[in-house]
Image 1 (tube, rainbow, N blue to C red):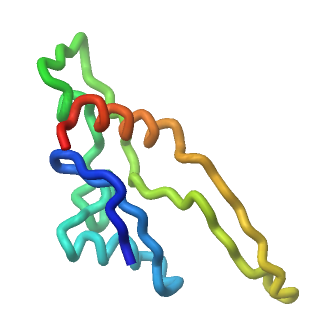
Image 2 (cartoon, rainbow, N blue to C red):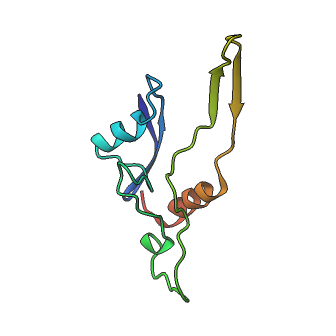
Length: 112
């Protein structure tokens, strides 16, 4: 199951809820429906995100560094069952800074 939260020219912010515990499920299925994950090397082309891709009249002084140079996949919540006790343990994590920066750039410069 997936849900699109925001759309941008060439990008989307989606929420995905996997149905199984298979490790590649999200990456394979999104790529199969032509929604590859930004930076995903095995199933999405592995392209880094550069500000020059979206910012009009971007002027580079020197070599441009990627704003995101890894798979743009984040789990805000995760619950697991402890082996032996079956006690459920849950974890939460904020969106990492590099992903927040890219999302803010998309909102600012990339028309929806």
